[in-house]
Amino acid sequence: MKIHDVVSWTMITLSYVQIGLEEFAVQTFFWMRESGVCPNEFTFAFVIFACANLAEHGHCKEAIDLFEKMSRVGKRPDDVTFMK
View 1 (cartoon, rainbow, N blue to C red):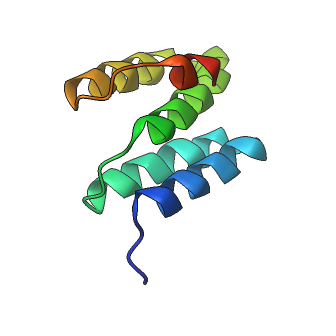
View 2 (cartoon, rainbow, N blue to C red):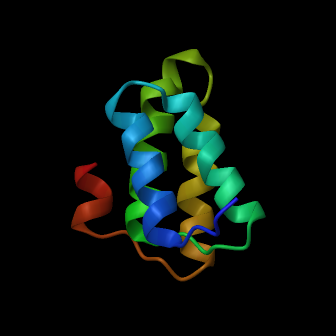
């Protein structure tokens, strides 16, 4: 398997969100972290968006946890984060 960078992982995540497969978007985020790639603000924005879409199914806590994790790794929320 090829090694992915943050851009390719983020685009995979975004693609899943765009076609309504939020569960896969969140799983891709975890695979990215397991592979040692550090997410950027766009990655977090897309994953939070995916979690928000899943909130009605009991996944609201994941969105909050990701938001807090984003702050811990030094990614401050900005206009892009909140627009997604």
